[in-house]
Length: 62
Image (cartoon, rainbow, N blue to C red; front, side):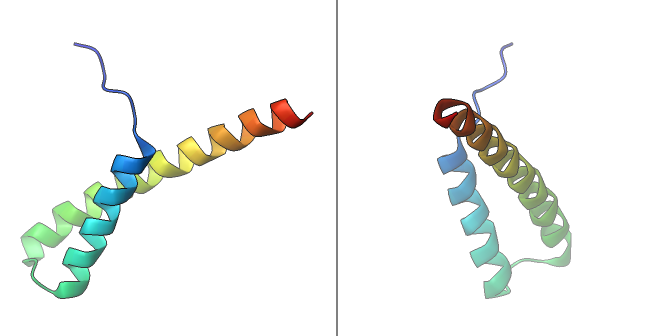
C-alpha cells in the first residue's frame, strides 16, 4: 500500500485543532498523551516540509 502524500496544510490544520483541544481542557490525561504524540509527529512533518521547501527556493534563486 502506498504511503499518502504529506499535506502541510492538512497537518497544520490538525495541529491547530489539537492545540485548541488542549487549551480548552476537554481532554482526559489518557487522551492528552495521544494528542501530544500526534502533535509531535505533525510538527516534525511540517518542519521537514518547510526545510525542503526552503532548499528548493534557494536552488531556484541561485
